Length: 499
Image 1 (cartoon, one colour):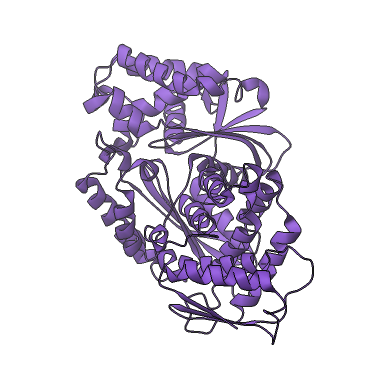
Image 2 (tube, one colour):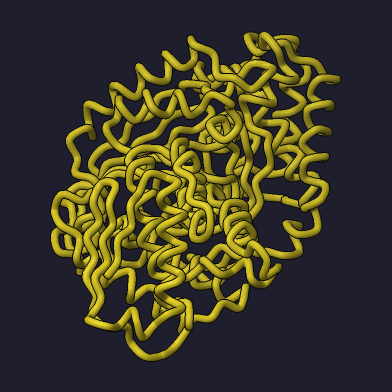
């Protein structure tokens, strides 16, 4: 049980089409939804040919986030999860936008991979459904990507994300709302090409029931019911009738779909092409639409972090096991790191910071995974794996931070590696890395026996280590390593003293 769990938590999904926010009361580990906000921002429409997010779209998005921020700005740290998806993965100037967006919300924003998005979507959908033993196929059409997941109960087993969404496909094939049979056929073919490598993996033979999530699928479901083309969710027959209705028109303004929200009309053809292609390619006959989605998955993931069930720890352990790391050695390094953290004074930025301690634990577990590729410069291999792997629970920023610390664990120590990290990690990470470096150094002999009690003082540019009398004289290899380490740190403006 955490010391002081927040009374209210929130999740924000910065999607490529809409921004969503959900606010929940938290009592005894139970969630009660108290507020929902949604605004259609169409972030994906603001990407130019070079994948830069244009100024007008950024302004529209930031205006929305100012309104969201009024609701959550004063929530305590750790009580809000905010993620960006496909458009913020794609935009080359997303970092500049995120700085302004974080200021509007007063909370950090994490950009997640498509695979992590798929995991969170499944979590949100599964939570909204009654538990059963069926193998579920879950599909979510976003503004810039579509996720496909197969899972049982609360556990996703197969996950994929394709770079096609209702906004991007509508912009590419139905410009200015123009419709034609040829354009629709081309849009469907494009979606089928995206799905082709995964057709066997997600085919109807591999699951018992199909569940849809997202606004696009809810809109299609609503239209089919209103037109009496289906009374059982989204069906193959219902889609055929809807496609025939759409392709007989020349413009979206001619569509007779009274139950469709007018603001969704411009992106409706793209979403329909994706679901139609998915039904055709994967052999789907019928799909039920669920209420849960990414934002509900985010809230549940946040709940896990609050109550010490952070899936990132499980991901780190699984990766360490996969790359055959020496777990006993990692545990010794972890113990040494905690011994140093416990001695930091209140002036140090890492003092009593649980997030820093958590990342250092993961760094201790994973710092040697590169050994499984090559012993020479293993820190580079370790960092590459961590930065590029699909690690459940980790955002892109999380993985870059962890990779940067591990890349810098030995030999040359360059402060330039930390400059591009988001605040506060650009300040914290150099000191976190120094602690990891010293822990690795002091445990280099890999002996089981404990280190002697030693003292550490970590100032802004000065590090002081003090060992028991005569211990360094009796440990000439460690002494030599410390002399070398002092040389590495000096090049980065730090002074290491030891006695």
